[in-house]
Amino acid sequence: MSPESSKRFRVSAYNFGFLDEGSKREIRRSTLKAVAIPGYQVPFASRELPIGKGWGTGGMQLSLSLAGSRDTIKVIDQGHDDSVNAVSIRHLIQSCTQVEMTRDSQAASLIQSRHRIPEIPLRKDQILILQVPQPDPLKKVESHEKKVKQLHADKDYKGMWLHLYEDISQWGDISISADYPSTAHERYLFAPSPLPRWDVPKLNHSEALCLLGAGREKKIYAIPPHTQVTPLAFDDVPFTTENFGKASCKNCGADNVYLDEFIDDETGQKTYSCSDTGYCHQRMAERRIQ
Amino acid sequence: MFDTIQHEPVLSVQHLSKRFGPGCSSCDEQKLPSNICAACGTIWACKDMTFDLFQGEILGIVGESGSGKSTLMRCLHFEQEATRGAVYMRDYDQRSTDTLTISRQEKQYIKDHVLGLVYQNPWEGLRMDFSSGGNIAEKLIAADYRHVRTIDQRAEELLEKVDIPIERMSECPRYFSGGMQQRVQISKALANQPPLLFLDEVTTGLDLSVQAKVLDLIRMLQREFHVSILIVSHDLSVIRMLADRTMVLKDGDIIETGLTDQILEDPQHPYTQLLVQSLI
Image (cartoon, rainbow over all chains, first blue to last red):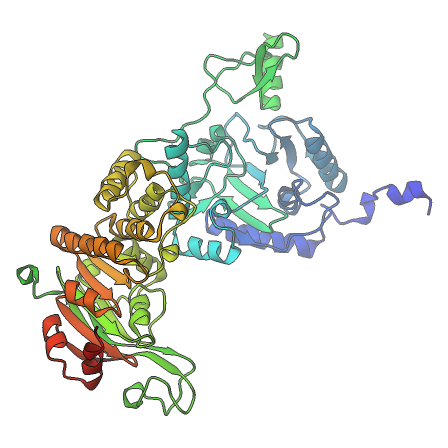
């Protein structure tokens, strides 16, 4: 075999969706359990993929186990459709399933995303799949897996509350910007991927099913449609989302969206643009038509 | 002191036994001469203990080391599972359910809302890397306080009461002296004013002046809040000073119960006599 051919990844040798049917079934079984117990982390037999663990393998396994030939899939990385991670994941999914790929969140039936939820509210016929690096919010306050499981079972979340309290007494406010600890249906405390605070309220009573997969940590959990999602907050220090003031997107002019900040190296001037590029492009296209 | 005591028990312990080991057919705990079964080596740390604790009362538990004092305390605080017996608490559901049989979540509720426990070693009861204010906040949060300002105020109030300067509130107990740590631990246990307080050798290892401060504090608490207190100690002078009633334990048995004065002045059981005579 020449060095050239050994490097090439021959997709045709693999099953539809890369994973074999037995693996897919195992992942779906764990997914069903996760849907049945909102916010509860279901352990699953995380498979090896041609990308490294920690690079979205949890989300990929969910996408590959759910994808059917009639699906349309969108892949997002921090809001972007065209960053390296999104492009390579999209390429892998497409090469081993041949399903249609899209950048339009409304045209997609499956959306795999890292760290963002699209700006346009999702519908009930869509599934949102989030890649999660650290599925357990309690790992921040207790490092032993066994104890953490016991705390979840006892619904003993005072460690997390105390963490927030110390944050407030030290900094005057809660300093957690992404991955804000929230409860599902007033029972399980879960880590909402590392979504910015902006996106957490979108999970509350969402129309779409949201699945969260952590490949390295071998956990799947879910926020089923119409689940009550409550961010932890004290009565006098309520949960707040990011505030961009009067800033708006320099490309499409949107102002009620999550914005990325850019600083010009030479002038030092701050500009903003939509973090959700699919949404931004759509708005710009509409403008051109008008 | 006695007029605050009512006739309905706050805590009622019935036939509580705790076994360490497999147990066997020959080790019926009530017939064992000591607390170790000769046949299977099983240790019976508590044997068929029955007693009540009343509102506003301080009940002392004395006994030598290995007599089952701490095991009893840990069983009542659900840290160890009792082998047999029943425990009823007025402030859980008016003593209608045996709290040893309820779910872990319900037990957690009792620990957070009804009980306060002060360990002999402050390292067990405190988070040493959190501020003292945070430690008190933990108990308040556990008892469903969700208002930061209220929690702050309450923590300040409590630390003031136990003579810890407010400016040290944001310091970790790790950097405090043993006596100060113990006082922080007591204020943590008391933060949400639980009706039941368990004190496990709270003054052991403290120097005399600090001991006196802690004892004063406990007396003051009992007077002000009418908490019912179960206090374990091997120090008879602590018991004499605090307890209304006293139970003497030996080898897992309650060998004598009575008013503290009565026990100390006129001990009936040979072991109690020995104990009282050993008092310097």
